[in-house]
Length: 278
Image (tube, rainbow, N blue to C red; front, side):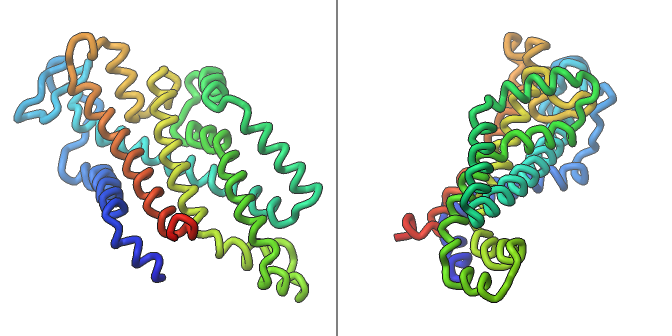
């Protein structure tokens, strides 16, 4: 608890948290402040920002504020879902292998390393391109989560292996606790802060990954995300035409989300990592 209280005394953590909460507030409360309509045309294509439309319109004449809020909600959804999937899969594999050791740990480590050397972006591109019209936000998030769990499994395994020889774990083993009970009750509670930091990084990675594949035209088929907004701006020559409002706000939102999460993670590591704390 003292470490958590100390976390809120770090300026960088408060700065990153404020940025991230700001994006969450825009995503959740934006529809209450603006009339969100991403279907109707409200003006000419690429109409410049003005009093009626603060960030102008896109290539179809749709209000850009509505597009950005909708895209922000979609990107955060993909990031959180993919982050949960990658963190849960990586944590379970890493904790179980790190605790058991021996042949099972060797097998899980080899499997993790095998998945680790496979180029994730290429796999995502191949999977997305093969699905055509079946690409939904949920499916994209699940694909990202199932292809990015490897590095978190390696990191959590190292932490779990260091806890295997602790006295409380040995005592639980002597008292007849099962492997699952020891992992869930004696090891995972000591890794919660570390697992949460892994989740933060996985979420940031998922948001950036979704933006990347969507910019390539391989994102969600029937949804609007920040990456899809950037792709529409690219394919409809907004950059060449100097229509900055069609792509810069989306770029800023993606950057702010990723940057704020990385700042939060760095501040947390400085508090919860004993070597860095010293």
